[in-house]
Length: 201
Length: 170
Image (cartoon, rainbow over all chains, first blue to last red; front, side, top):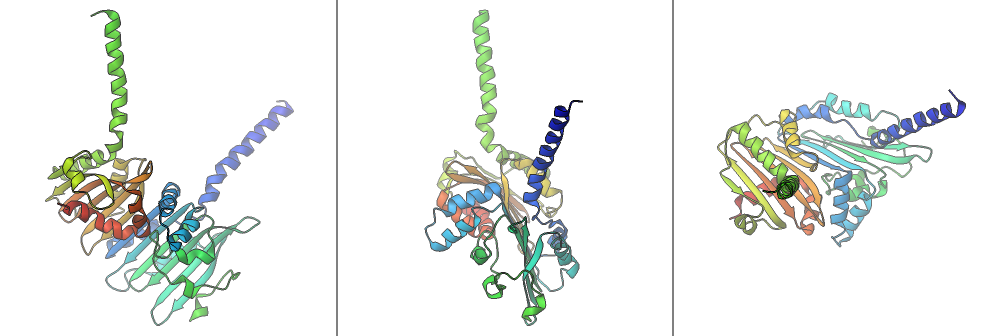
């Protein structure tokens, strides 16, 4: 085999590997929420909202027709996103989901690139809201976000893919299926990478 | 018949056969779901209004340009749990052109609603499949662009109400 042929094959192998790796990199912040599916049988209400690339483009297009400032902020926020996935369960009584159910999601958020940026526990209300961010690459650019909001009778998981401005995250509350989570109240100081849920007790 | 006229006729028939599926294609998922529900529950829709139907388009809910509706009654939908084979049954019927958008399951109301969406020029087309305890409906709606803002703002609420609005319009 000639040297130039070997080089060409190596280059082709390299390009195939890089090309194949690109979608995986883009999807790396996507959480697997299938383990929560079993809760559907116990839940009084289950809501699943799925907005991936084409749907977000549509959303961005239609929001542009709305002239109010809030819609403009939401539009600005979603225009570069790759996906918004929301799964929420509402139960008639407490104890219908277990820590194990939530831990299966938390386990995925211990992977490379993920860090918890907000952890709020309200002992009085028995509410626990955690916000995780995935940052990758030399510039630590944000690749995605995950929110777990656990209440005695409610469990919500929000997974956002793509670059997102954390300061504007609260603008998404109440839109695109993202429930109102009072993120503004529980927001961690800018630059803080990991918060302990006990901090806010 | 001469050989050339026979060939011309054969060509015309061929072209029409090629074009027919494309012309009907936009309604294919709606028809496929209606057929599948009919065969799954061994039932026929008690109300059926086509996209071009005068009635359907007079009775359409606000924000809807055109609508197609099929309603099944007196069927047992108790086995339609999400996560069962029902999700893939619907996704197969809908095909790749519609994107899954919202799914709402309410055990309280005994209701399960699936909403799929696809872009159509300046607006969007929604396919809503709604199951109640003994009733099912399939609705395909061509939306006015301004109506979509509300859908993206509150997808779950709109999913819950859209089937009822469409079914209960006069």
